Image (cartoon, rainbow, N blue to C red):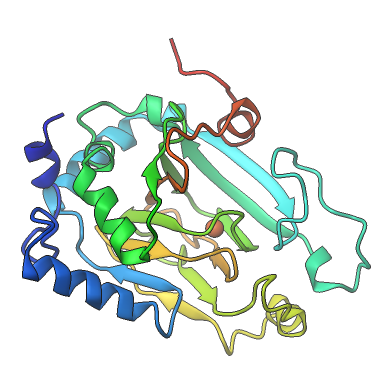
Length: 276
Ligand SMILES: [Fe+2]
């Protein structure tokens, strides 16, 4: 797909990433960086244009039969091998890090998306990569090469959720295509990760103390750039069956040419190679 096609999927009036040397672009980057000063989440509402959202959803909704249901119960702190469904049991059962959290959601791999799917098209637009690099203020950040996991589609239907966890990578970039009518909220608590060892509050959180919880007010087309390695976060259960929650996850890595490898693909998508 040509750059011009990818560019037209982005709300360039509000997010002028078409010209990376303009004053407007520099002001946008500055504004985004400031969001990170008191939070870990940079929320960009209406980043994707409505016609791009509609086109992506038309395709994704037609491919429901390709979704893989992923089910695990895992501790929040990535102490397990991410390639297995086994829950860490070496810790004291009273330790907050040992409490299992339910992960029940559906995934579609990159190779199941067409080349004209808007989320795939903008992922391959170098300007978007540069924008993410600039907002995070990191010199090394690249799109990945993995044929199944470059761009993933994550679907939550009624009862699905992603329990409290921290990420094993420094940052995540997501675009909401459609929210649930009830539930399916993206929530996080700053400074609750391994770097803080704030497990005392984590234990309270897991028992229902939501006093420090923040909810990202994502709507259709919202992009979120998120630092999740040191931040507990979750997607709350989708309550009703009137509307699936559909999210695109764009993968970036500090090293160019990254592949996630067969076991990670098997874990999330139940297959290791692209469909023939
Ligand atoms: Fe996460």
